[in-house]
Length: 272
Figure 1 (spheres, one colour):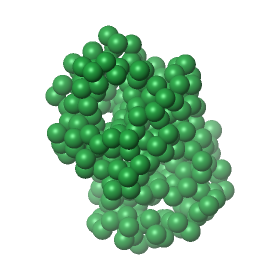
Figure 2 (cartoon, one colour; figure 1 turned 120 degrees about the vertical axis):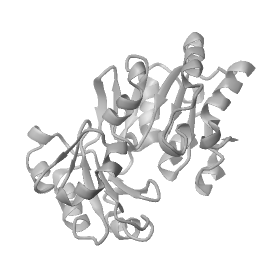
Figure 3 (tube, one colour; figure 1 turned 180 degrees about the vertical axis):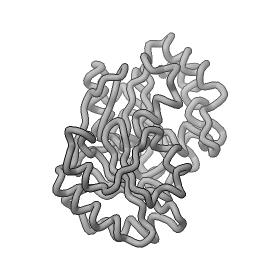
Figure 4 (cartoon, one colour; figure 1 turned 90 degrees about the vertical axis):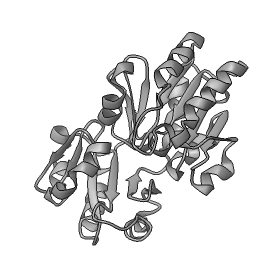
C-alpha cells in the first residue's frame, strides 16, 4: 500500500501555465481519507511552494531546493548547507560567465544582484521571497544575517539554454559539488550526495513510512534519485528520456494532469 506520495512541481504536477490540476483538491481529500500523505518535492523555494499550496500548509511536508531542505508546518526539518569557501568560489566564476545569472538560495530566501532586475518575472515564479544585495559574497560573509546557502541556482534568464551556457561550464566544480541539469533554463549546484531522493527517504523515515510504501512523480533529471529509490517511481509522459528509462511506470503528461489522474486510478484500484 502507498502511504506517502512525492511529486515534482513544474512539468509534473503543474500544467504548462503553472496551474494545479482542476481536481487537485478533490484528489487530496481522497488521499486524506485513506491516510496517505502528500509531499511536493521541488527545485523551487519553500516559500514559493507554500504560496501556491497555502491551503495545505498544515497537511503537507515540503521538500524544496532540490532536496537540500525540508519543512513541515513551518518548521525546518533538515537542511544541507554548502561550505562558504565553495559558495564563494562558484559565485566568482558564475557571476563572470557570459549569459549566467546566479542565485544564492538559503532555506527561506534567495539572494540576487542588480543584474537580475530586468528578469524579476523569472524570479517570482520560483523564488517568491528574494532580496537584492550589492554583492553575493556578502551573503557568504554573514551567514548569521542572511542564512546559510543550501543551493546555488544559475539561470540563463537573457536567453539560450543551460546546455549551451551554464551546465557544461559549471561542471568544473565536480566532484566537490553536485551540478544538476534541472531544466532547460536552470543549472543547480549543491552538496554531493544530497538530492530529492535522499530527502524523500529521510522524510519518509520521519513519518514512519518504508521506502516501498512511497511513490514519486517526476519529469526531469533532478527527480532521478527520487523516482529511482521509492517503491513506485513514475515519470510523466513529457519527462526527460533518461528519467523515463528508470521509472516503474509512465503517467499521462503534465498538461493532461497525469499526476492526479494516476493517483485517482490507484485509489480506485486500492493501491492506496
